[in-house]
Length: 173
Image (tube, rainbow, N blue to C red; front, side, top):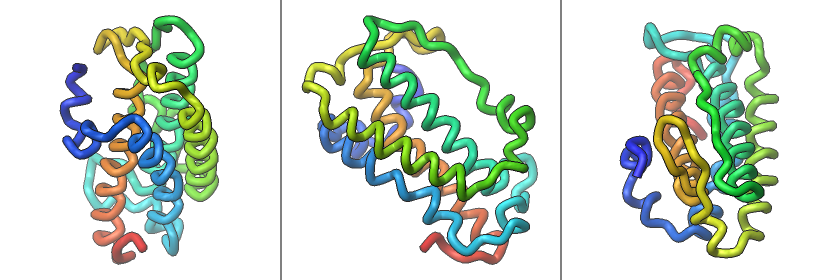
């Protein structure tokens, strides 16, 4: 298994494919809930030097999920597609994450997840074993990629939660 897969909690790794699809869909609302009540200054605060702001995290979640959906669609539709590598840290300054709307990014994340979940729900069981070829990790099965993104939103929400508390906004509701 690719090294990043091993960082996913066992509870996520041990889900059935259908449980993983439902967990993925349930994550659709999470970024929007995480930013409820935040002001622009709270969204843009950098309470931990050298890390992303809450706004930047939400926009990253959107971009990452769009890329993941594209990758999942390629795995479903193509035979052993070759995936490219993307530099998430290059996206932040060059796409000016600090000037993007966190609420629109959260909404796009939500809609993209729900559409992709509908696609995943309609797949035969064997589709989750289909693979793509990733230049850094080798074969990447659809089921592994799905579980990675089930975990990805929770991974970043923990950072948002910490930053909300540091900027005086309290916990995620």
